[in-house]
Amino acid sequence: MRDVSAVNDVQIVVLSGPSGSGKSTIVRELLLKSPIKLTLSVSATTRPRRQGEVDGRDYYFLSQEEFQKRLARGDFLECAEVHSTGNWYGTLKSELDRAKADGTWALLEIDVQGAKTILEQFPNAISIFLWTSDFEKRLRDRATETEEVIQKRVATAKSELEHASMYAYKVLNDKLPVAVQEIIEILQQHQRQAADRPIETSATT
Ligand code: 5GP
Image (cartoon, rainbow, N blue to C red; front, side, top):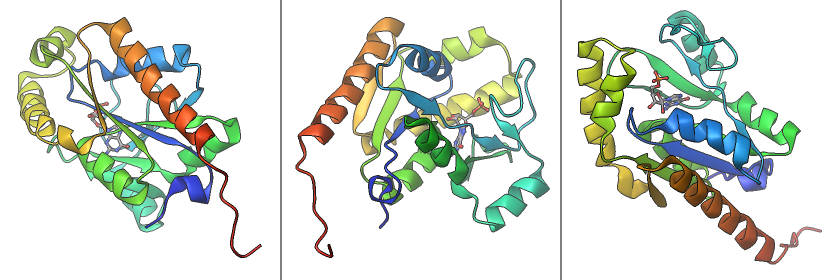
């Protein structure tokens, strides 16, 4: 088992939740307001770019071939086909390096399959599952997807809820400022715990 804290000193924060749980807004708020500075890991994806999305900022938009090539090269920490659409999403290892270079923690906004892989590799990762009592309504209000896609996302959301127990923290996002504050407190609590931990000395020195 490999843990990032031992490998390159980057604390990973994994945030998951069904479509419509307000993840993107929470992420935006956290990047602005968290006193513990976070670098958002920009994922790679094969899904088509939505209007307003920028390559390299929202995602690295890759063709299926390019994604497979990078997968074979071992560039991903994890990857998964999300929402049964044939579209792949993955976290690039280089994104952790970016967080390290910035001296921040790495925030991964990924699905439950990706979270499982990350938590297996990095047990010290902080895992947060975001949910809301009205995700289906939010998804429809957003109106960026076709009915077929919405149906698939609702089905995925329901199955994602079943995986919530894997996460250390479940945060209800019915009131945005409350949810943001709750997450900030979780991060600060981890920071305090890390500071309180005695410094380990290597047996080989
Ligand atoms: P969207 O297509 O709406 O941007 O994202 C769909 C889903 O893909 C979200 O649930 C998001 O958490 C997930 N996702 C985004 N990036 C990654 C990634 O790098 N890995 C995994 N496993 N899931 C991701």
